[in-house]
Image (spheres, rainbow, N blue to C red):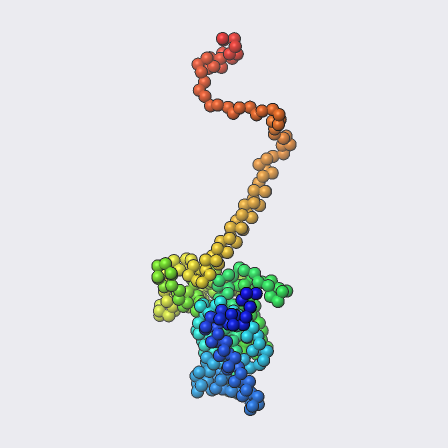
Amino acid sequence: MAILSTPLQYLTSIPPVTRAFTAATLAASSLYFWIWWTTGSTYIPWLTLVPGSSLFYPWTFATSALVEVSILELIVTMAVIPASLRYFERLLSWFCVTVPNLIAFAFNWIEFVATRDADLFLYGMQYHGQMALFTGILVAFTQLIPEHQVQIFGLFRARVKSLPMAYLTFSTVMTLIGFQCPYIIIQFGWFVSWIYLRFYKRSTDTVSGTSTYGDRSETFALTSWFPPFLHTPLSALGNAVHGVATQFHLIPTSVPHDIESGYSQLPGGARAEAERRRALALKALDQRLANSANNSPAQNGPSTSQPSRPSPTTPAPPPAVDRKTSPTEMDVADTGAPESEIR
């Protein structure tokens, strides 16, 4: 309740980049609604991304991400993006916002070349909104705490690493049934965000001052997003593409320590690594307890005898003292006669 004591304290707690991005979203969306209200036209190629007109309005590759074309979309964006971006703005970049728009622009032109349908693929679609950015936030969330469980709407529980793929599945279904714009941009946003965080995100070690790039750990590999039966072909394809990109110096090199540790160079990485090790330790402990429970009956056997316990009133015998055997005792042992007879 302390953070919500006054609206001013809440606003000052939001980082400047998140505040500026939220204000720009409100301004651009308000401008779109005002033009729609005054002119009655929803075709605004100088504000949203129209593949056939964006070459003449290149700023739309950035401004289209700030425009929501309905009140419901604007409400959802204002409820989700600012609250999430304040924690992940250090991980993400403009790279995750503009590059998906560039890919969507190129994809529509490829569709036009294949079908020659300019009315649909060049001028019939207006890409807008922050779906690509929301996908990037889910990818960054997965990178930090992939095994953490969250509760959605108080009804469903899911692991964090399953959320991006669920959103991606929704995008695929909407695209296949005919709603390519704007839902296909979710897929481009996922791929661009993963590439950026995997290979290009720069981190500086506060102790040594060395810079590393990306998260090269196995838990954030491309195959970790897909079911096991796809791991072999995806690994082969990914290794081939990675080899070509490395040969042409398209991917910055990273030190071996970064390749092995992965999480250690990320904000909150120590907590994620601790959570991963804790889960592995608990799993190993459960296996050890299960093995000991299964082996204990076989070791004890079917014996039903109980070991005798000394009476509480009877003092326990003194512990045996390890001493050397005297010559007299050795003679007694050899002759088999009691020691009292020899004396």
